[in-house]
Image 1: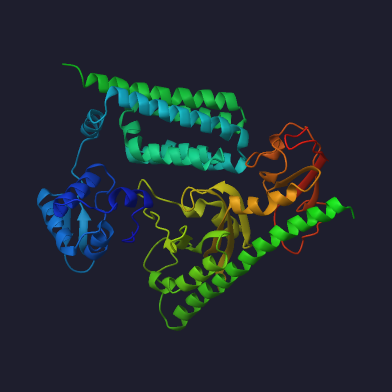
Image 2: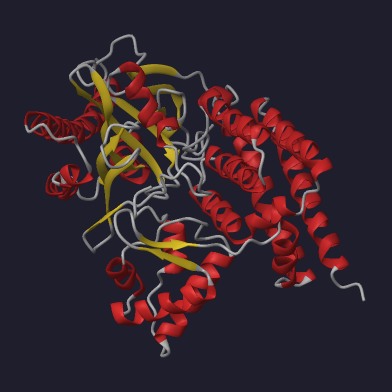
Length: 248
Length: 255
């Protein structure tokens, strides 16, 4: 993978220039957060020290300081020589632990509100996609569905699922709805599949199947209803898990 | 020929010329890219990212030349063509007012943000047909984040398909060019893309983005110019678009 292939999305999150004091500390925290959130993936090579310092808007001295701390914390590993560089070492966190930590960051009210927002965007996009889809659009959606069905890990499912919803918004011919889906998936997308128990995976995939079927039939009302119900079910699942965390 | 028919054909010929101008610039970029391949071959070196970076001044010139019309341009390499990257995009976009920026996308198949450009219509069509393609309008959520057309020309080195050279045009630029002309027509007029999507019209009954075939037949629309028209006036410039005409417009709000 090329060094500079940090996506625009991650670049925006990671590389907003720093302004306040305690720069090495701020850089350390920001990189550690990015690794913990999975924005930087395990084994991924960081850009060169000068590139990274440049992108973060700090001196190489400050960056080296931060990298030294991250190495001590076990977040980064530096290898010398050919093929060397600084590599991300994600802490091995069990899916359930990660879900719990993420859920604790959000209140029940926030979770419900995010669910409402997602449902509003997804159902509007589904309705418009049903009326504006061409055969080619449906074919693209089916390819992502096949990827979702073939997926074996939570990360793969999340990726395919995100692409289905983003493509539905693109099929609606709306850059604004598409941007909303992109933003929502980058903010809370990791939660969606962490919360699905193994025995329900097939059912959740079937919900996507039914939604794409409705889009293919150009049945706008059905597509809207199915999308709304699908997101509502996901939200209820997350709310249920969040409530369990409140049990004494 | 009636005044309306002449006006319709002028309209389509004018936008076809705008598009053809950009295609000509892309053809220049294609030539330069093929030369990069030939130069590397002659020197016994493989083509790598550094070799492609030499195209930057030419891409910058293309974007300056078509400023306000082409929003992005560059070359996209077929998988496993470059020596030092399995997949690569050398694409630049014009940032409003502040020069041009390189598009960074995630080429790692294992990443959540992985972008598989080989599945995009603007890549797969030229790959399949070995002909230039005009894709869109579509929502480009990778580069422009806008409603976009992508023009692409296949890069052929020897007999091998090694990628595409292309440019993005924002849908609003095409709209700006054609709608004032459409508004001068007294009958319902709809410009549609090759897959039947409405590009522009002169009535709210046919809003852009909708699929023509799925519209209630409130007007009988017949192709009058462009692709699919009986008397194709712009055959020389192969724009896969059709201008369709219907009954008189009583008001902008139709009927």
